[in-house]
Amino acid sequence: MSYATSLYLTAAEIGLSITALVLLLLAAWNGDRSARLLTIIAVAALVGAAIFSIGLFDRSASEVAGRAFGDLYRADAFGSFGKVLIYLASAAVLIVTPRFFTQLGGYRAEYPVLMLFNAVGMGIMVSATDLMTLYIGLEMSSLSSYVLASFLRQDDRSSEAGLKYFVLGALASGIILYGVSLVYGFTGSTNYDGIRAAFALDFSTGALFGVVFVLAGVAFKISAVPFHMWTPDVYEGAPTPVTAFFASAPKVAAMGVLVRIAMDPFAGEVDAWRQIIIFAALASIVVGALGAIGQQNLKRLLAYSSINNVGFILIGLAAATAAGVASVLTYLTIYVAMVIGSFTALLMLRDPAGQNLETFADIAGLSTRRPALAWCLLVLMFSLAGIPPLFGFWGKFVVFQAAVQADLVALAAIGIAASVIGAFYYLKFIKVMFFDEPTRDVETSSPVSHWAVLGVCVAILSPLGYLLTIPLGEWTAQAAASFVAAM
Image (cartoon, rainbow, N blue to C red; front, top):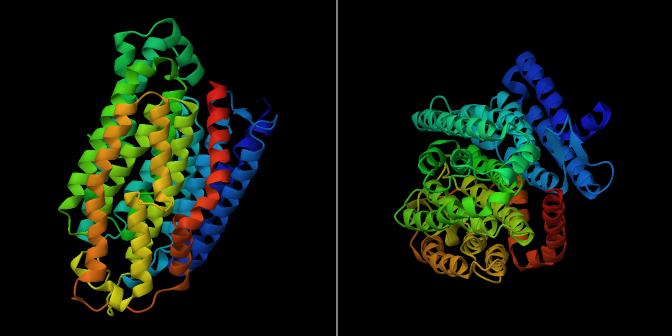
């Protein structure tokens, strides 16, 4: 394949990289006074990259799509679908970010630049077909994430979150590298096709250890149990817009990486890694649900909710079928809407002095002060709990259906039973907002940008979201089919 075609297939990442470099120069010349302008340009670049990825998705089965740069990168429907979610989630977070930092003493121009570089790394991750390409994308995303987590330098909680994320992230990167070295040592290749072919001939105990280490490192990035320990502390300490970002776009990228490496280079060894995925799925569901019950900080509760939802997504992967891959993509789409809507609502919870409200005591009686916001939170929480007729129910339904079709009936049954535990703390939101007496004054208005993002998320999760089931089912099925066929 020519370099011209390779450059075209990677145009989204190249475009975002060039935009980020230009914005970096503008930030250096104009300082923080240009931060809002840079944010607008960054949002436009991310939306443009998403539109390009949609076009590439439509052409994924034609001669335009293919493998770029000597099969280091693959432009297929699976990767394009993941990148659309990543870029749109990043853009949504950028839209609701400036007000938060402005209130705390100034919005810095470096923020949108870091977000763009992070998006570039995540785009590389979901399309990588070589372990070295995967690691480059992973580190590009991670390095900017460490800075974002500690972006409020005057806040001790933010500094602590950044340090914890950096130390544990470095540990996860080391685990992945060790796994990559073992896989390379026993297969002689870092390319996904070469690894799969070598495993088909001989899958030794040493190679199994390599697979386990790679999966363990990626499990850290998706905050699956038992590699979840960083999530509550980082989510609570990081600035709320950064937490919204961590819970959405990087989660999609890491899950895309996990699905691709499990179903591509390790596709012939399903029995070896399925047990790991099943354990992580059930443990994440239970630990996420039980850990959230006693939480009073809303960001910390949503961190455990994120762990819980990762468990449900892993049930779809455990099926190891095209339907399972499609269910993972469907759940991720719905999950991104749920988590961005939830954190946007938290950003809109402020007292008259402009201080953000982050505990259950702060939202007591919210329905009497801000009824529209309270009802939006009701939709979001019921959707996270998977209560019909909200669209969050559909995400759980498709992953359980994929598990049953793959003869994993016991796994589906345990997952359904464990999901009842999570309903408790989601219903606690409703009880506190609608039945408790108000204890604090809340700001009575919010920016139009916040309402726009929240309104889109709530509309998707409402019963109107079921209008998306047919097109969403077709898109995810196409992404899964083209991906599995490429194996």
